[in-house]
Structures are given as structure tokens and as C-alpha cells.
Length: 282
Length: 316
Image (cartoon, rainbow over all chains, first blue to last red; front, side):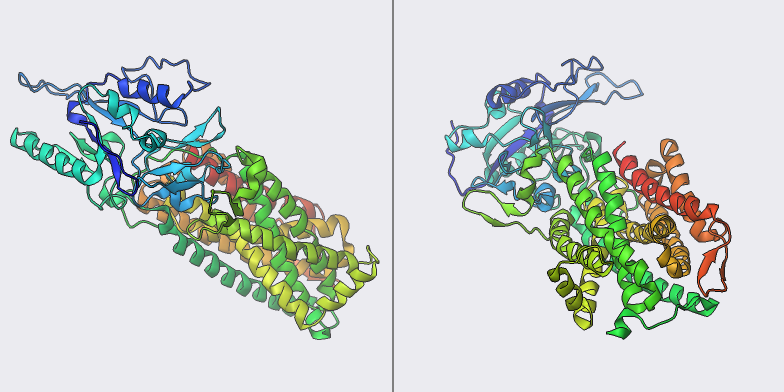
């Protein structure tokens, strides 16, 4: 049944990596709907693994990660492992690092509670690229501004679910109201635990990670294995504002002190020039 | 600084390269020169006035070059003004995002450039290079406590401009940059030391009447270099704590760090700059004329190398 999409309500993705088969239909659908080009400097085929896309960037807003997870030891029958698969995407963080540092106001939160970059406002300073802890944002080489997944903002406005979720053949990518998705995700995690897959864990369903992620995941290993910062490392760039500014202030005070010492030393060495200072003249 | 022993970094590099390096370099010199010029004029002696004027000439062209570099670095240079005005429909108005030093820094540059322009015109008028009545009125206006207040505010603003560039890097999720709080102070200290060196260089080349200030600038450079070394040590300690020391001080960057350290040597050792002594005329001169140009030039190369090492190592 199609999801009814209402402005003012929070929507997102629940990506269940345990059922991802790495077909990349999501990548294709995303590229097609959003008319995203191939990166100019890519041949389009990395040839290093089944993962030929390599990364999320300004023209790739969905990327199926193939993470080598082949164990060193021989596994028992039925317990073999090969890859951790994960269809990666912008996490649409509640406390978004990119929004935190955007100096132009180009990055906004939409009426669907998603994070969106206005391409006609962005001037390409790339501060958001340095801030995004997930390496999601990059410059789109055609438009020459920062770009990322919009959670198909235009489709949502038209009452349609995002293209990637629409085409996912295994329902690894599920779209819907955030509260419903979270209930569904926790049920699925508990089910996997009952099946003995204790490693199954949810990432971003609570406010531990950037206040909660509108695109959250069921992972089959610890977050770091998927290049996702764990809860302890999910920190905002603004954490360094206070320390940095205090550092400048302390250095300025010491610098002033240093200048006073230099003047005193110069005068003591006999170099005091004659005549009153400008301030004294005044 | 995060308290996490080994920070995880998965952020991508913003590709801030040569334009940003040049901007950081000139921002440091603009800040340091405004500070030193203000100090020399109001807390020095009358013989320091030529050096003060020399210092007041630097911030305006440095700011202009820096603003040009910042604009050229944008992917959409014609939208540079989006930093100042929000063009989001229904939200038109000034942009001021206090959580990012980039926004604060842009405004500091805009306001600072007014101070730099006034200081530049004042120096020109005081040197008799412009003789317009308005220039004379400006110079008269800047004498006394009004001028002192004006330049102290300008110096504070430019000290911020010299240092915020480091905070800008730290307020990110990049390895190295976000693992320390020392970059702002380090860039400021290096800017002060580089500015003292720049003024020494300019005195040797263009402004012999500023020779009486040479002693102060050489001594100042030593103190600032010591401060810079101290903050470099803090940088190393904070990076050790976060486990990103190898990334910053990896093999490709060693020559840059060595160059940065070499730039501190003239100040720290005082050997290349030579000892100070008093001439019969009562002014301070250096004993070895060769060092008059070589040592300050080395300091300036060090200032550039320090920023290059910080900027490039984190984005490799």
C-alpha cells in the first residue's frame, strides 16, 4: 500500500542491510530520476570489486557498499560470509553537521524533516564537505555546487515515495513516516536476535547519533565496519568553536605580553628612540 | 578537542588547496601587521611612527588579495555575496551563522576591510603621499584617543582574522584539523612572527627611517616564534591524544614541517638575525647585513610552510 505523504510529518529511510543483495537497482533509480551524470574523471568501472561505484559523491547519491567480510578461518556449513552489503545514502541527521557549518543558508530542513541543499543558493565553498562525518556531500561537476541525496524532495512533494525505495526488490530500503519505520526496524532487529544473529544492531534510530538519523540502518556488524562513526564519535564540528576561539584569545594576550617584553628589552638595551609616542603626543 | 582517545574520521576532503593556502598566509600577515602597527604607534615612541605606518600599509592589500583568493576558491565565484545575504526564498536578509567560523570570518573581513582602508589612507596622508583636504581631516581625526580606540578595535578585529582561519579548519570533522584546538592560536602566533619578519624586510628595502624599530621587531619576532613553537607542541600533543599524529606528520609532509621549523629558527636562536647593539646615532642595527633579508624571508617561508603542512596533510 502506498504511503500517504503529508507535509509537516517526519519521513525517512529504514535500510535493512541484512536483506540487501547488492543489485544496485537503487543506484540506477536514483541516477535516472535525479538525472545524475557519471563523474567526469571516472570510467564508470573501478574493476576492483563488485563495488564499482566506489563512493557517494555529487553525482552518486546512493551507493551500495560491498565490504569484504570474508573470515580468515573456515566457517561451518551455512555460516559462510562474503560481503557486508549496505545501500548508503545521506543520513538526513537531526543535528546535521552540514547545516551547522553552511555559511550561505543553502542547506535547509524541509517540510518532510529532511535535509536539502538549495542548488541556487549554494556557492560551492565546500565547508559542508569538510563537516559531513559520513562523506556524503560532494561537488556536482555539472552544476558546480554541493549536492547529495534530497530524499527525492520533488517526488515527496508530488506524493510519491523516493525512487530508490520504490525499486528495491528486497525491501532493504523502506520509506515511510519515521515513527512507523522505527517500530518496524526494532521488530526486525529482535527477530534477527532470536535467530541467533546477535550482531544485528540498529544505527541512528535513537538520538545517540546526531540526534537521530532520518535515514537509519540495521547493520550486521559494528558501525565502524561500514565507515560509520560510532555513537561516541558522532560529534558535531561546532564542538571546536569554543576551544579554538579561546586559543586565539590566549595567544593574543600572550602576543601582547610578548610585544611589551620586546619593547622593554629594546629600551633597556639602549634603543629607546627619542621623543614622545603618538599616544603621548595626543 | 574531542576527549575520545582515537577519533574516527570518515569525512571527505573539501579540496581546499592553493587559493586557501594563500588566503591563510595573507590573513596571518594582515592581522600581525595591524597589531604591530597599532602597538608601535600607541605604545612605542615617536621614532616608531615610520614603522607603524609601514605596518598600516599591509592589511588593505593583504585583505584584498585574501578576498580575491576566497572568491576564486568558490565553485560559484559570482555567488560570493551569498555568504553575506541569504537568498533562500522568503528568508532574504543578512546571513550570520554563529556556529561556523566561515560566516563570522567573512563578516570580520568585511568590517575589517573598512579599518584597513582607513589605516591605509591615514598612513598615506601621514607620509604626505596624498594631500587631499579630506585626507588631512582623516589624519587629524585619528590623532588622540579616537584614533587609539579606532586602531585598537581594528587590531582586535585583525588579530581575529589572523587566527580564525585555524578555527575554521578545526570546526569540521576532518582528521587532524578537528582533533586539536591549537590551530587558531598557532596561526595567530605564526602570523605575528611572520608580520614582524615582513616589516623587517620592508624596512630594509623601502623604509630606512623606520630603522629605530628594528630592535623591537627582532625581539618581538623571537617572542612570537617561541609562542609559535609552544603551540606547535600543543598541536602535537593533541594529535597524539586523538591518534592522528602520523597523518599530520607523515613522510610527504616532513619537508614542510621542517621548513616551518626553519622559519622559527631566526627568531628562536637569534643567530641568523644577529645580536642587537646600539650605534652612535642611538639606533639599533644588525651586525650582518646579509641576515637582514635572508632571515625574515626564511620566517615568511616558514609561515607559508606551516599552513601548507596543516592544510594538505589532512586532505591527503
